[in-house]
Amino acid sequence: MSRDELTKIMLPEEKIPKFWYNVQADMPTLPPPGLNPQTMQPLAPSDLEPIFAKELIMQEVSQERWIEIPSEVRDLYKQYRPSPLFRARQLEKALDVNSKIYYKYEGVSPVGSHKFNTALPQVFYNKIQGIKRIATETGAGQWGTALSLACKLFGLEAMVYMVKVSFYQKPYRRSIMEVYGAKCVPSPSNLTEAGRRVLEKNPDSNGTLAIAISEAVEDAIKRDDTNYSLGSVLNHVCLHQTVIGQEVKMQLEMVDDYPDVVIACCGGGSNFAGITFPFIPDKIAGKNIRLVAVEPAACPTLTRGVFAYDYGDVAGMTPASMMYTLGHDFMPSGIHAGGLRYHGDSSLVSQLYHDGLIEAVAVMQNPTFEAAMLFAQTESIVPAPESAHAIRVAVDEALQAKKEGVSRTIVFNLSGHGFLDLGSYDMYLSGKTEDVALSDTELQESLKSLPRV
Ligand SMILES: Cc1ncc(COP(=O)(O)O)c(C=O)c1O
Image (cartoon, rainbow, N blue to C red; front, side, top):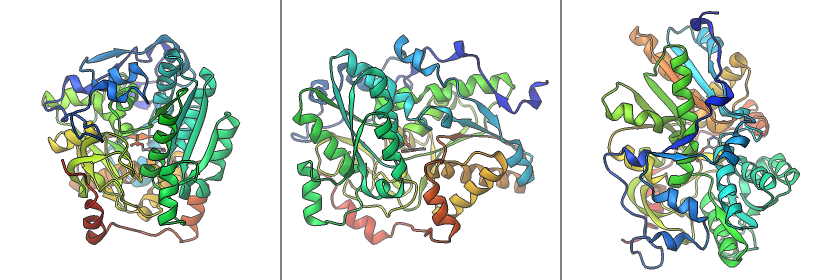
């Protein structure tokens, strides 16, 4: 078969990357240091030791370009990596476009999303440090599931605080976490002071990732046997996800192609970082490539947030970092892409956006589900609502190229499948999904919570 005819571009197992790529080695401007939330002075790595494994803290601040993937992690990556890169032939046909559309499919991981790429190393580094239990938050449940399985595989306990709106929208997520032996509670919960404080003010709170993070951090601080783990945002999480983009580059080489545009949905930014960071050196070297982050109009961090120091959580227990933010007590509407309901963005992604190396676009919920439906009915995979944001923009890019009479190579990350998001599809199919955009008044109100630095 000629390379032009390939639909599924597969790499052999030995091509699983042996190193993660650290974009900090190549960024023209590094993000300013995080600040200790109590003193508002630059953070020392030791400030993070009460809740993070030492190796992860080293990775957080490292400027080494390549960081070796431990063999224990790489062995477990073998179960699902390298993940396939598909040429979306049926979608291209349905759209009647000349452009080539490719998607990297991270839904082949045992938990159904890219989150497992970082759950494995995070739990591994905690295990070798003697930690017995990990507390974490989860939005849509993808991260909680990944962490639960990684904990089970390495013999640790997992405690997951799941954003309440998603806990009820996606009940089977909790079931999977329990199958993997984890405990999962809706957040805000009354198990922590942070949760109780929110519930006192608003007993019907839908929860947010920022609240769930406060609960998990508090849990980890209070117990010596427990560390905290975050599924996105932090530098080491973005680092671990770069296996995605490294594989994409090799897979495109196999078919003699190179992207004009790479697209990924952006919650805290690690999924976007994973597929795009390995292309950043090319971009800096002058390659004509666009890297596009897609966010929901209901939570438009990069496109409408401010570039400022802010906390990662609602209670201000996490370090203040320089990021695009809507304010740490921002309450996004209960949209179905729960994993994209985060007020801020990774410092690395934020700095690259500030420096004009990446772009961002915000999309509404209904057009996103419309693109997800078209994708499912052509490419056969039911996408996670988060991933559908990237599909929407990939489709728009292909249609725009058609209008311009050109052909482009469009690559997007299909970060997860939506088999446990069918309640959201039901809502869409019965016309109950609302298009919500953030109002200026809400935004101004929420930005009042920014810390003074
Ligand atoms: C399927 C899926 N894609 C993307 C995201 C967003 O990920 P990130 O926070 O890495 O941007 C999530 C977050 O939960 C997700 O579940």
